[in-house]
Length: 134
Image (cartoon, rainbow, N blue to C red):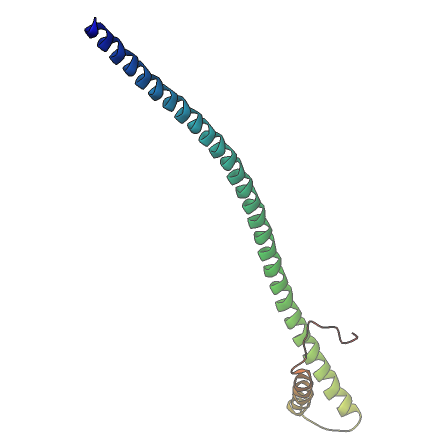
């Protein structure tokens, strides 16, 4: 009977051992489920962040397009201002001739260039983004 008791005890011990392993398997399964849920939650957050990044990239592209448009407008404005300056120089030269002051167009251009340089010098150091009325 001693043999039977030993065998029975071994079976009970093995049963306890298997039960412990099964409990750890269930615990590990629960941990895996929790991790999968966290992964799903994190994946959702990643998708939201990617959507935000895409929206921001669209804004950046729109801003870049506006910058290009503004640069084109600035270039057009510079051409227009050059034409206006040339026209004013011509008219000033013609007015001087009507008043009896003979001067060449080059002399009038030099006069206008001097005025422009003086204006540019007076604006040096001014922040062009600030309103002069503030």
